[in-house]
Image (cartoon, rainbow, N blue to C red; front, side, top):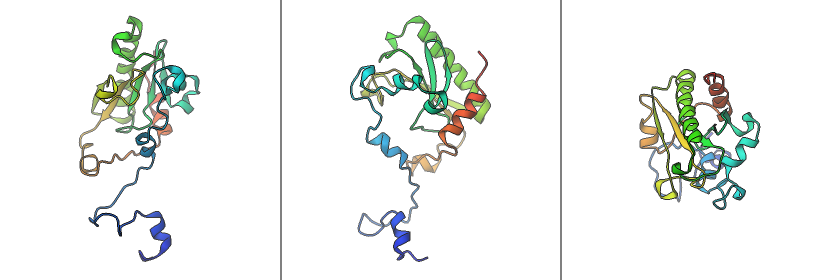
Length: 189
């Protein structure tokens, strides 16, 4: 088929009339547009304002992408991951700041973070991790009203040309497949 064929052009990005042709192929990640547009983002700062971290624990694990549950905190896959297996450790309680957690929550967030690292190593052979929290929207928190700790698995070479030059991540499996693999490798508690 030639590129003059309208059927080919319909599904392809426009190359005429918009910018300059640069000879670079595009890997389209339309699922990221929901994040960019702020879909599923709470409308306010309270749990009644649509906080996904307050809603997810009420769903079945597979539907909510919950990997593990504790008494005061739980682990869920990030819907907009930086890498496959990008996990979030969240307290059940709707709090915005790390200093608002009580001792039991601090201990369980830490323990679940250790378990997440263990499960990711076992399930995917992760070679390293970025672990941390973005407290407040100015610090980069997408959902600043509900504290969550990121556990991002890393592998040698995963910061290749795709994210650096192409500003695109390649995720090799669907989120539900990742959730099932991690849940199957979660340490017994």
